[in-house]
Image (cartoon, rainbow, N blue to C red; front, top):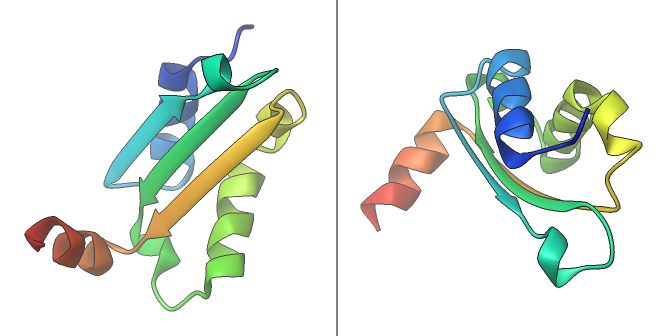
Length: 86
């Protein structure tokens, strides 16, 4: 199966019960499959950045074996709300 931005988005939405997910396919700017993601989930509440990234990595464990570069930004719903107000 080909990895697409839509596939990654749906997997993150389901796996992390995310309120909001943005996925940008950055493959054209690189030499191999690459994505940049923003994930907003209540599962990130009270967790430091490293634990948040681990949750994302666990959700995409199989897919990350085929992804060359993966950038992620993880926010709680409260952080997302504050960012949207700026």
